Image (cartoon, rainbow, N blue to C red; front, side, top):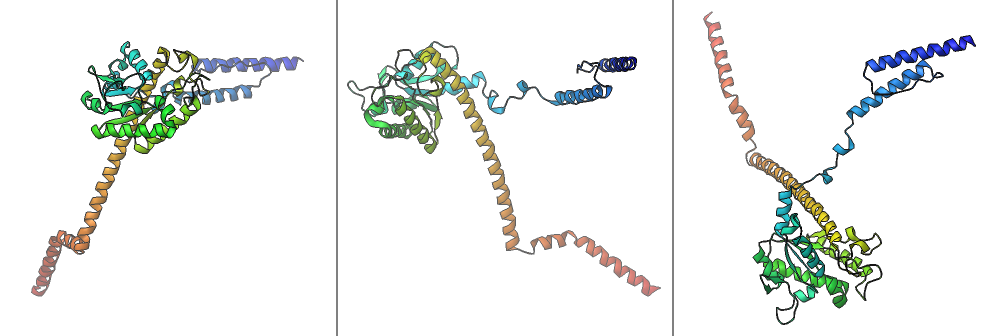
Length: 345
């Protein structure tokens, strides 16, 4: 029994000594040495702690290694300029965003709008006369392909279709949308086109063809059309949905389909992300173009050298001979002089 007590006390002393060494070495690991633990176990734990600390020292904190996609790409000024050079086209949903934006002090305040209630691609193609629905530009109704060139815009964000589906069906609404965009590009061939998804109604509040199942299908058609034509596609439907294919109640202002200010606040956030994504894409395309251009230059130079050698196969050999001609002449002169000296002797 006494022997056992002595062993335990000895182990306590060893742990205490080891703890002192660790403390003097400013070690950050903390361990409690139990009486029943051996000195070897304690040493093993200290070694493991040292390895863990070294690994932690070389590991960058998570909040310092944000992925490139989450890094801010545009400054506030660049973001404001991006949307200041844009026009947003649409129906009453877009009218709501126009009214929201006018009250803000952020980048959305300077966005230009061509929006009017009950607007649609179908209505847009009608002449400006009578009660035909068209947005106002400088106090007058105007067809958007005539107004956009006067607004000095680089890009157009278009939200249409909800008022077309009931009249034209899904594919017909898509085709009329394409016809309208073609008119815009005919008048403004350099403008960027960005299609905005239509948004849902509240659950079970759809009417006829205007139901959420059709709206979801229509958005897929719009996305496909955008991809096929190299246009942008901006999903502003998902951020304000309930996760089940409906407009979330907290983002609805009228119990049907129109949006609340909180919905447009989410739109504002989505627009920031979208502009950043466009900037990253443009940067990537620029890098790829530079790489392709450099490769093309190298290929052209290689082809030129090949053509020269093909036309004059001896050109390279002659060049090498020319570079060594002085050395050859000097060697021949030395040999001749040596022969003369031998004859004289």
